[in-house]
Amino acid sequence: MSFTQHHFALFVSLAYIDLLTPGCTESDWIPFRNSCYLFSHDTMNWTKAKDYCEEKGALLLKIEQFVTNFAKPHDYWVGLTDQNTGQWRWADDTPYTMNREHWSPGQPDDWTEHGLGEGGEDCGQIAYNGMLNDAHCSTKMKYICEMQN
Ligand SMILES: *[C@@H]1O[C@H](CO)[C@@H](O)[C@H](O)[C@H]1NC(C)=O
Ligand SMILES: [Ca+2]
Image (cartoon, rainbow, N blue to C red):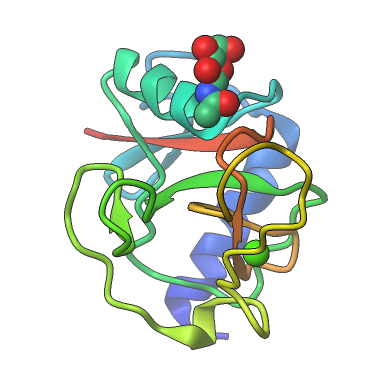
């Protein structure tokens, strides 16, 4: 485990216990490096989650650095979508460079048999195992916002 991963693991543990820590103005937000993070308890579809983060002056999570020890008992929306352009982009409209090592095996698969309405899977989530998957954007899911200080 690298120095960086160690600190990320610590940050994930802090997120579990909702520690009130100085550095973030809202109590549910967890400081890590130069950002504050919200691991939501409520669930929203991808677009609502993106809007909620933006209302808070934050972004649906843009993952700068992947770690293998992301261990959370939930799936969370992150700020990845290919719904408008067919190309994966971050919620701040910057391009995402595909790296399949960060996706669960066989993902993104743009699955269409979900029974959730039209289209395939165009929105990105991070699963409990720390790997990405594309899911139907209408799915209500927890989400992670990142506010840069
Ligand atoms: C997301 O949720 C909002 C409000 O609940 C709704 O208006 C919108 O149509 C939903 N979008 C999708 C893609 O399901
Ligand atoms: Ca998928």
